[in-house]
Image (cartoon, rainbow, N blue to C red; front, side):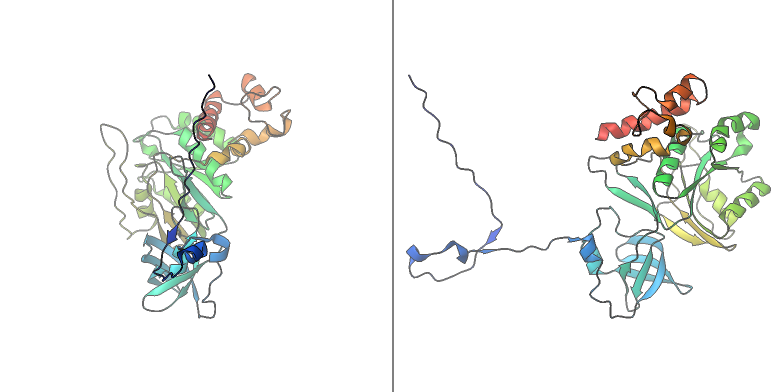
Length: 360
């Protein structure tokens, strides 16, 4: 007995249509093109949106100090702080980032009531982290900066070298100089042992400064590094960033909080990024404490090139695209076997690499 084929269902494709009232005298002559397809507003591509239709207006350049919302953006213009809104055109651009504008951006403003940001100039660089979801949306922490001060502490909370590694990689990927600031050294009984731990970073060319709110000389040393530079302070919550900033710039009175006696972790005292002008020259971008600093899954290809200490070995690997994980004749793995590279730091690399691989 032959099988009867089931009648294939006709696929229904939904169209985005709207209808208008029309008088039809002869239904047999009705044409489909009398149905008008609705045109909805779409996001502009970045390249198209960057072309301002108001270029004939007189615009004034300024620097973004703080971003509260699209309607409350504080901009420094010719020595004055002016609250601005974001132009409607810029809101329609598909920037593919969570925030359209970031602290440190250079913008062109139409001075009016209210003043409007009409153009965001191209960024020289940016420090970004990425949302921990499948979309991995980019979150721009700060833009147009010279150096990132990776602030950590010896205790309360304890030193987290893995987070330092992530920050260094992110800074180098963003073409920003990373500087490690180890704070609260007054809580460390064995300074020599601490410096031996941090010696790995010093030997690989990274600047390290040891600070304490109770040591005036360390604050002066930090001030020298910050002078006439645009710096972003970032790191784990509770490491004492706000306390250091208050000492560097008396009168700011940034809110500080105690570390939990139960979790030994800090609470967020800075709730949004803000740019502050130093009295001694330069700018500070203070950011909220970040417990995890996620990279983008596509960074997995550049990670072997920017991880601290790998640059001395990558030219000696057999394969130019060596990931230093499974390949034969890998110079990095050989260095670990010979005791030339610390195994703890290699484990940190594998943790970052595997986390990015899982996202792919």
